Length: 244
Image 1 (cartoon, rainbow, N blue to C red):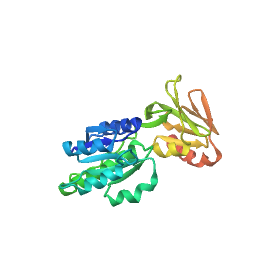
Image 2: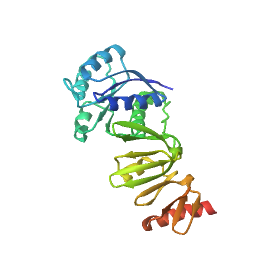
Image 3: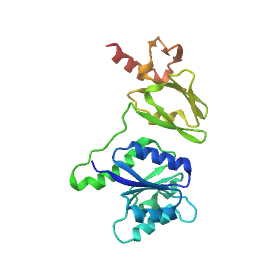
Image 4: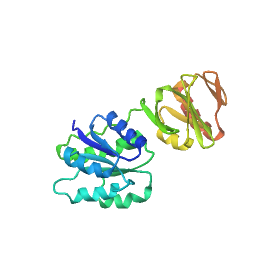
C-alpha cells in the first residue's frame, strides 16, 4: 500500500492533537511532523517534502490560505492540501489553491478518512491500486467533552440520551457516562445504522444491547426506554427480522 507522508499544522493544541491521532489511526498515512504555525510549517515542508498537509486556515502571522498560495508558487510539485477550519466561508477560496478537501471543525474520523482517501486515490490512480479504507462499524467515535476530545468505543455504548443541547452517552461501565455539547441528531448521523437506532426523540439505543422487548418499550439491563410513536414502524421492522 502507498504510504503518504503528512504534516499537521494548527495553532489550537487540541485540534492539532486530534489530527495527529487520526493520522496515527490511518494505515496509509505517516506523520512526518506537526507544528502550530504556518511560518514554521513552510520550513518543515521544504525539509520533509510531505505528500499531504492538513492545514488550519486561521493562524497568526501567516494564514493557512497564504501558505497554500506560497506552496503553489514554489518550483516542483506542491504537497496536497486538506484544509481544517471552524469557518465554512473559505470553501471557494480553498478550491482556488487546489485544495483536495475542506474539513469543517469539529469533524469525525469518518469525515477525515473520506478526505484522506481522496488524496490516496489521486496518488494511486495511475497504478490502479486504489482501495478505499473505511471506518469499521465496530470501532469508535470521538466526542468533545469540555476541552478535550474523548474516544468512545461503539461496543461499550448502551444507549444515548438527549438532555436539551447535550447528549449523555451511557456505557457498559454503569459508573461512567460521557456528556457532550452536541445534538442527538448530529450524533445519530455519525453512528452506523446497522448497530444503532433512534427509538425516541430523546434516545438512541445500541441494538445488540437490547435484552427484552415489550409492547411499547425496550429494556437494556434494568433501564426501560419507551419507543416513540414516530419510530414504532421502523423499530417494528427490526424486531420482525429478529423474530423470524
